[in-house]
Image (cartoon, rainbow, N blue to C red):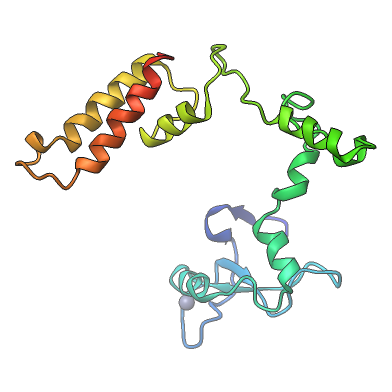
Length: 192
Ligand SMILES: [Zn+2]
């Protein structure tokens, strides 16, 4: 593949003189799409080549999961989900926030108690430990769990303005949302 440059967008390959694989299209086939043969145990799979318009059309209609078993689809959709998540041994917080594995315990009740301890909320970067309610309150305000005092105040006043009936021509349809925002702020006042 000397002289061929891969471009991340749409798998573009410059320097290709292949025609677009779409029937009757005169454009150059500069964009790579999966072929009939998928990557697998038999090898890397093959490709077909389209112009930009036709690779877009192809991507829109392509079923990436066609021919895969339920287990393979699950693995493809959730590469880091479930049990695998507990094996990220090299993360910065490994050994701190990771739940102990079942195999480490002889007594399953010991294991359960230990896992419960591991789920205790961890302190934030600023040392504050938020309760579940306080983390939910940040969710309601649309803020991350490391949000600081000024972010909380700014977001709160912006949302109150946004949802307040006085700002919406007396429209009370945002009342529930406004109430949630006020309650969220109340829950966070003890922290910030
Ligand atoms: Zn084309």
